Length: 141
Image (tube, rainbow, N blue to C red):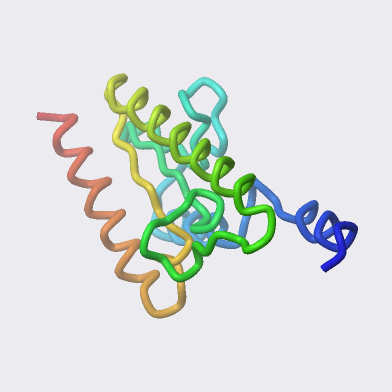
């Protein structure tokens, strides 16, 4: 790709309302879970916030957040140093945000893009539902 073509492609990548995020939102809503999106008052501005469950959900793209061991995370062959630095900064920021939320008493759920593929989304969301209900029970004890 020419630099202009690459710039055009990269400019089309969104940070909100991505397909993986929409899949999670649709599943949660259809199963009766009510949430807020990108809440500024919650540290890290999670993709999905379920206040009733005191839970923050981050839907991470495997490439952008450097999902280790995932086939979708491949370091580009051009401008490698830039990409490694960028992804490492994203990872560090993510860990800092997760820690801040946990210290404030929030449950943090990270859902990776690869966990939302056709064959595994049901199992992934079942696990999320289990974590939500487990946290709710813990809160009311």
